[in-house]
Image 1 (cartoon, one colour):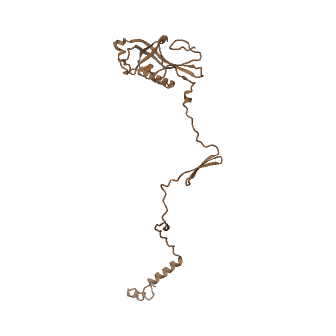
Image 2 (cartoon, rainbow, N blue to C red):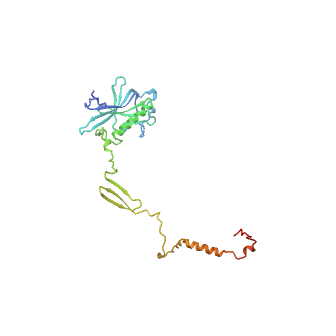
Image 3 (cartoon, helix red, strand yellow):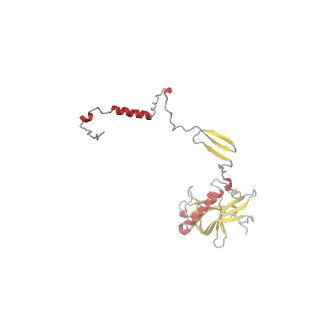
Length: 274
C-alpha cells in the first residue's frame, strides 16, 4: 500500500514508512479567536453558548513518516491529522516541525491550540478538546517524544530533520577506555617502600613518591647531639652473686647468743626447735 502525505494528499515514495504514534477516537474541533495576551490561549470561551464555536468532531492521529534521503539516511516528518471518524477522510493536518505548532491552553489540560496547514500553505489555528484527561496526557507525551527524537526546539527551522538510519545514538556514544591489564602486564606496589612500578613485557617504569610522614615518630636525641643521654639498665645478676648475697643476709640477721632464753623460748631437752 502506497503511503500518502497527510498535508498534501499526494502519494509518497514506495519505500516510505509510516507509523502511528497516537490515536484518539473522538476529539472536538473549535474555531477559536486569537489569543488576548502573549501568554497563550484560554479555553474557557471555546465551549460557551452551548458549544457555538465547535465545528467538527474528529478522530486525531499522530503519524510519523520516514523517507530515504539521497545521502543514505532518512528524513523524518511528523503530522497531526484530523480525520472524519466515519470514513477516514482528511479534515485538516498540522505538520509538527516546531514546538509552537501545538500549544496547551492556559486554563485546561484537555484543550490545545493546533496550527493546521491547508492547500496552498494557508495556515489557521484550531482548538482541539479531549473528552478524557488521560487521552490529553498521552497526546502531550507523544509530542514530547517527537521533539526528543527529531531534536527541534522553538528556534529550529521548519521541515523534517535528516537522520542517518538509527545513527543518532551512535553519534552520541562516548568512547570507552580499557583499563584492564593486558597479558604479561603486572602492577607492583611496595607498601613500605618509596616507589611504585608498573611492568609491561620486561620493561618497567617506576614513579617515586614521598612517603607520608605525618604519623612518623622521631628517634630520641643522643648525648652527642646535645640532648640528655638515656641511662642504661644494669645487667641481671649471675647465680654466684645471688648465692653470695644470700649468705651475707644470713650472717647479718644471725641471732645473738642467749637471745632465745631471754625471750622465753626453751629448746628443751630434745631440742624441739633445733
